[in-house]
Length: 464
Image (cartoon, rainbow, N blue to C red; front, side):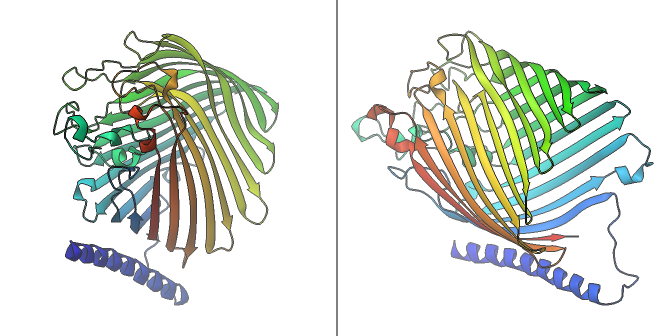
């Protein structure tokens, strides 16, 4: 294992050294006269970069430490990114304002934990068209993870009776998220809009998709050797609708909108789980919003309104028809002295990857950036997330509805640009998972829902 560790570290260090050598060469070339062999990046090549990172993860599976002890690992990653911009190839009068494609593969290697190794493939495309009073935009992010098809097993042993200890299955909802994201899967997210503007009024057709296709194997978690094994189900949310807007000033608009959507949660086969709940639903969402720049330095976008749901007959809901709050927004402030403050918020009903129940998904995040100099930048961040499953009524087995999990993230980072081509980065993220449900019986393992997780990262990037 030590030999493998040394080889991996040497490989990453050699890559970093090569990148640094390129930086020095680029700096020297900039000081010397330009030669006929200097390569100039074409306008249609938006980005071309290489990156190497070395990280230390101190709790790979996000366990509490009450039974399973936290496993740690050094993580090495290498990535390449190519971005194409087709607009410079077109006539300046062309209505196509943005047309970009990007591909980024990244390979992750976990020392001593090869079951966690994976390669991610990210494909991004952005299209924006504007002509006269019409505008269209489409933004798609597609991810394929080539990873392990066996999910983690959260159990100290496979015994039965008094000697059994599979209490880690009660862990925090957010504890298994990093391990799940390393497994074989497909994700896709898009947003699309088509807008017509007439004076101060506009009408906008919109659509969005959030899609998760988990490719891990299913096992019967009620019998050894798979007690505590985590089955993951497929899920998605898709909707379409229309917004009606009025510009109260040239830079600020008020909107009223409606979304017609469907949310899907895969149902477990009876051979894998005796709990046959699956909480798919159809919804109508009514929204009021504000968007734009009320002052020069502030950008705001916020929608809020009731989300009226009709769940299918097998849903883990006492009332199959329910109305909840939907909210989503962002605020970005450009502060003096090259500082930026960004706030984001979202609250909606979604369905869990662990199956069975829906939950109220709440996220609040705050990020701060300061460009201290042209070379040096600092970042601070805070994020709060909550998964409140008490909206459901599934009390079978481990009682999926008896759960209100909280997670707090604190992050700090810095970047330093040696040249316009070479950027060094360092960061640390501390995660603190909590149980938000008071008075939970000991049989449901409340102590196992508390966990801490730290991730330290050093990286170097070369941009051509």
